[in-house]
Length: 298
Image 1 (cartoon, rainbow, N blue to C red):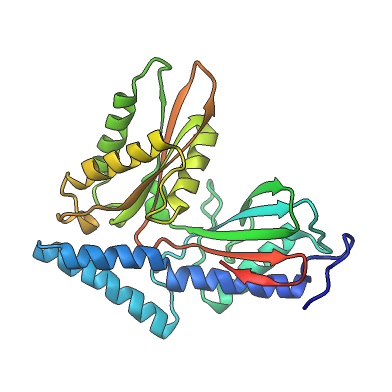
Image 2: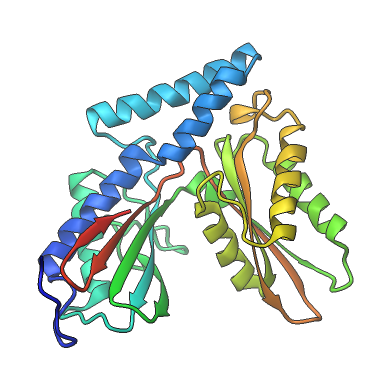
């Protein structure tokens, strides 16, 4: 058994940290989500429209080819975003943001990843997926003795199909639902359906968009803990699928992997609703660094 570490000892050494982050970055873009793959397989078996079935078959074939050849599922390997949960007992002997940037540089060369970070004004590419604020990192803190790092390579196509609406504070829930359904209809197949539709409600303009992205990361089959929200997820999924948009917008029974909603408190005079999507591969990968030295892939 590994001995317990003292509070002044680091949870992981920098070299091992960087190597592990490179590993999960490759895992995310090559393997995607096993749960998404299962849902798409079920949709393939249930689909009756020939063109829709063909598209789902191509997606399933893509999963197999990427895993066999160890190449990315999609040519757009996304912009590097990390969600980090940092326990209060965790001690690091290195600069976390600099180590993440080095991991991104190495992964860009080794996987390889498309160079997807550019200056928004000059459009000059940074050429290694770092710089100009990237890799972008969200931090959350808790009482604990481990650090969890979730990698989310956000593709440009799904990102372009994001939407924010600041409703009047007296808007009804039915109006909110209608906005979400109309937005999905407007998207058609542009976010590489079947996709996960993430919705954030409450907080503020920036908060609800962040919540929408977190919602899009939740695995299919995992409903909200709040019964009212879970019921809304189910209703919206059924209503959007009934539109017949189908895989890649070419018609069919299913347009979605699932609908996930996250809600957070808000100012009484605001009613923000954000929408973000995660395209069919459901790309993400997570690792947990424990204080006793264990590294747990999740």
